[in-house]
Amino acid sequence: MRALILVTLLWPAAASAQESAVVVVDDGAPELTWRRWQRRVEGELERATTLEQWARAREPVGRVSPERLETISLIETLLVRARHATASLRERDALGILTRAERLAEQHLDVPGMSDWYAEVQLAIAITASQAGMEGLSGAALRRAASVDPQRDVQVAEARPEVVERARQIRREAVTGPRGRFEVRSDTEGAVVSIDDRSLGGLPRTLNVPVGLHVLRVEAPGHRPWARVVQVLEGERPSVTVQLSPTDTLVAARRAADAARAGASDELVAALAALPEPPEVWLLWAGRGPLDRALAMRCTAEGCASARRFTGDAPVDLRVAPSAAPHDRSLAWLAEIPFEAPPPPELEWFERWYLWAGLGVVIAGALTAIIVAAQPQGPGPLDPIIVVPEPYLPGAM
Image (cartoon, rainbow, N blue to C red; front, top):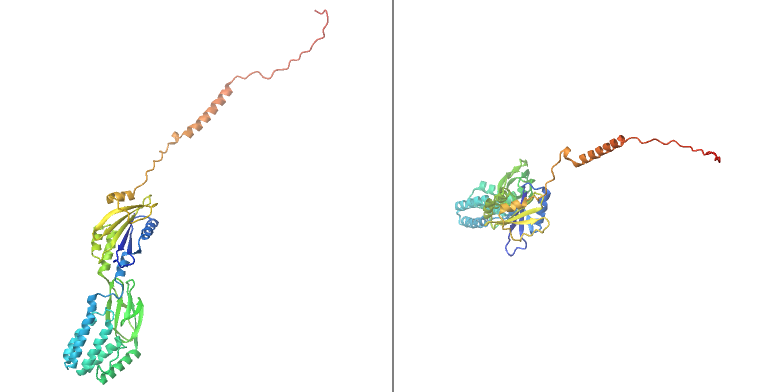
């Protein structure tokens, strides 16, 4: 038999539709049989999908936890403090604060929009280092900012005129300078790539970008995003292969599917309990016997109910009351074979009636022939008697 695992997510009252995930477990039933039952059950569900797709839909690309988003606010606070220290001629204190902001930005490059904040921190480092007489550090920071965010221009009110002019020159060189070319790959389904917060689409994809530092980010639904600052050199460069890690939700959903495939209801319930807003699961067994039957069992994070029984000539209604019989008896009902009278035993050749009937006919014919042949022969054909009348002579007597 085959078991189909149907997962139904109960959305809040404001949701317009109920989503359901279907996982098929091979248990020996013919493919045509379990697919037909799968379609019938899916017809009773508002939105059918798989457990993995359900988990991926809960964590789409671009979704970030509130905790990681708070980093942007922290970086902004550090920038304000650093600018205040720079204005107070405390450049070393400002550079220390900006170093912390730079480290935070590099650790949270997976957050959408962090590339702009990384470039903003580099500009602040450049302005502060120039004020402190560190022109080498200032020029390197300007080049990093121009590579990541070439649209960001240093305003006259932000820095000395020579810094503003140097920043504009570096920006022009970044746009019109040499370029590097490399391919980005990932074996994760639905993975997309972005460079400096500009989405470029699915993978694999070849990138052609200006030489310099860039923020490379790869994301996929249900997976933790990967982001790094990469140094792009001129010409054709080696490809970059990114392996994404699944989120806790996707791991728990896969564990639930594995438990369902193994028929381990206790492990299934435990896996559902590990999911946020755990769904309900319908286990559906499609019979592989001669009778067109199926079983459906509802499971939640609290446990599993008794199975419901369905036959091929009745509509599938998941709202019917479950059977009061134990599950093992329901499985026996599913595999039940209809009673058929056994065929009569095959007779030996000498026990077959038509043989003796034919032989009797032959014997009877032979006996008849013998009896007829044994009868005495009767007289042959009689010779004709000719009577010749003589003339009558009176007195001849």
